[in-house]
Amino acid sequence: MISLHRTMVLAVGVLAGAAANQAASAPALSASVTPDVPARTIAMKTGRITSQPIGHYDFCKAYRSECGPVSKPAAPPRVTDYGWKVIHEVNQAVNFSIMPRTDIEIYGEEEVWAYPDVAGDCEDYALLKRHMLIERGFSAGDLLVTVVRKPDGEGHAVLTLRTAEGDYVLDNLEDEVLAWTDTPYRYLKRQSSENSGRWVTIENGTDLLVGSVE
Image (tube, rainbow, N blue to C red; front, side, top):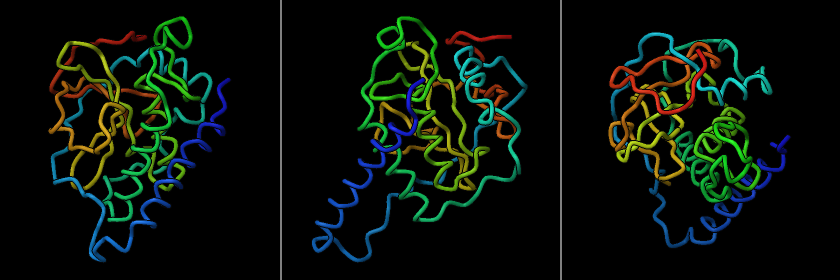
């Protein structure tokens, strides 16, 4: 099994390096500089319970503690400036530290969802970002792996962040954290905010592009 600890150490090292670079350049920055806070957006409208991606089903068999009911389901939180700083740092650190590779290239098979070591597919980036943000105090119910369709028709996975200001996306193809309405994707389904092992539809699309179990 891939070492999650090793991957976390690598990503944390990237975060530390970024912090050091920021400190070194601090004299040239205004004291009023604040982290980038995305513009307010709207929340995704979710619908019925739907099929779980088969890769996530297998992932849950290996990591059962990460795929059950959320302990305290609640309304999306208001994220502080510091919270946004952490979100941006985690998104960029994982994007930088993990090389993009397909499941076929890494495992010789399709639809393997796993914590990446040095390389991973889109869903692996999302899983690692989710884990790291939960470690930093964010709720599992507000960090939801999401299946989308890219403009070219290819399936893709991102991490959705629920907030009081709307829903935002952490994407391995984009270093900025964007409002989901500012991305080019068609949103299909995501983890339930009440149970990380269940998936719900997103009401602006129902086509499924990744293998699923009924």
